Amino acid sequence: MALDNMTRSLCNKMVDDYSALIAPINMAKSAVKNAKTQLQTLLNNMVFSVDLDVITTAVDNLQSAAAEAYPSDSLADMAALKGMLDNCDYLEDAKPISSILGTTLGVFEVINGLVNAIVVPEFLAADIGDGINNTMSGIGIPGGNSLTDIFKKADKLIDCLSAICGAGDPTYITVATEYAEELDNLYDSMNIVSNPLSSNYGQFDYDAIYTNAGMTSQNILQVNTALDGVGTTGTDALTSIDASVSRAKDLFKGGFF
Image (cartoon, one colour):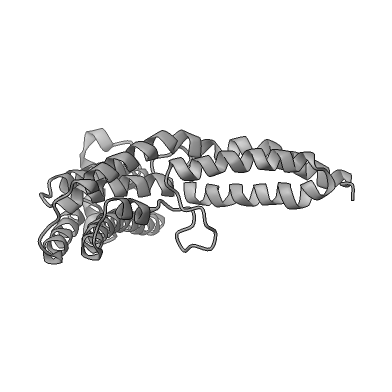
């Protein structure tokens, strides 16, 4: 059945949308591939810690030290912020909200320094993995694009071109096939899970890296514990900064600043 005008117009829109949609993936491809190679090489040759306690202790110490580096929503921190804005000439024209948000880069520099200072081998892998995860989630990418979401959306676009547009005009099937081949190559080269039925769909495939490295279940647990610990530290920092911003907004409305 031939396509009606509206359907064809929308099909053409999807054809045009594809390149712009996957542009952030292409932008990040080299970084993810390089990190994948570094992680694989590291794990292939790693001498793992003797037990999990070494990693959990390091995670606890990391999170405790990191918490001292980021702002909170406590009234004491709000008073400290007001004192800095009132008494520091450099900040005399600064606003409370922008000042808090401006601490984000410095906070993560502190966290990176703390992670790099940990003399536990699994944290070398965690540092690389956290960089991969941040790239996949959109941190550090202009516009904050989630590559995982983009992979999934690109699959949907291709499915629509093939199943709906292609049903009325086979040329769309040709285009969809070309797009699918390109996306499959990105999935493969960047080591991304491409199976929609997997709980890790669209995410970096750590299981493949671990299998290639011949890691035991205990090795995997230790690396994942370190990786989760580093990731949680960053999440906690962002959560605290967001809470600090919300508190400052409320106090600003009340005339505190």
